[in-house]
Length: 338
Ligand code: GCU
Image 1 (cartoon, rainbow, N blue to C red):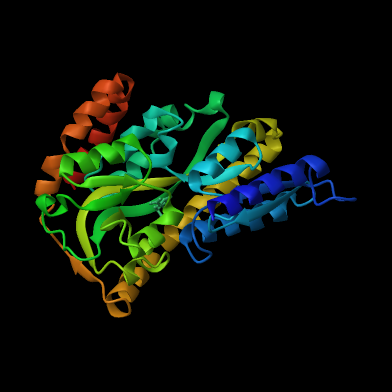
Image 2 (image 1 turned 45 degrees about the horizontal axis):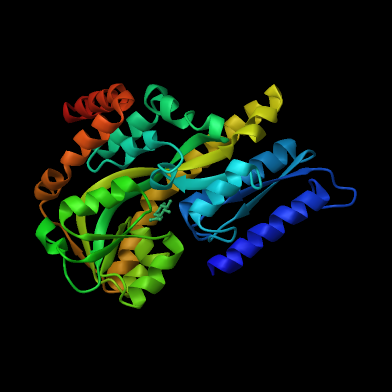
């Protein structure tokens, strides 16, 4: 699968080199390619489709936006690399994968960083929180242009219900390929098995993994609930997904085009976020009633306590994150007071 998708990416890159841009003869519109890992019913895809329609309507004489779902252009890591080199123009990436490109993204992967959904949304909408991180990879060829809701990540397992951190002991749990996520599992006593999203289903089915962690959509959209029958709301991470652009592409837009693209980024964000809550409710319903997944609501405090040292170690290793971390705490405090 990886080989095939890589071949797909290579073919794509060479066909772009041959034709320069556009679909070939007579069509000199630039094709704007966006890759992501989700299905065509996922809120991310709905947001990107709305973006494509908007840009095609406003700037259709110069650009044609094409959205490639389901890891068609490669794994998330591969697609970020394709975006970095400009082989494609945008990718939806998780904050975990972005850690490889800038350690500053570690802040968003801290367990229990946000104390409520309201604080999470407000902090992510605060440019003082996000700008220093989103613009940090410009020199490396990437810039984050919008955050999308990716819900709350929780543990789910094939056989062992997770009621407390010690239940994770000795279990092989898939995590995203990021140092922070690996350290998180170490603190909990589980065995972190980092791998790409597209490989998780097969690894669960083969028994290479005992479980994974993700939002509810992974159960249904990705079929993980066919195999994992216990989903425990330990609520360890509220994490955004990111729409990441090739920096040169952004820079080469005229001011007028840039303004239209900026409006387009807001459209992706709004469409995605508006669809999120219903998508989660639907996934939960399907998981419960069709896949017979048991939802468990453990006391989250022991999980939070076990993972707390990660805040200190990430801040100690990246002191420049401290002011951003403090700002996030202000957003948290504002909402505890409500
Ligand atoms: C979620 C998230 C993706 C991420 C995936 C994963 O689906 O939205 O961006 O790649 O989890 O666990 O890899």
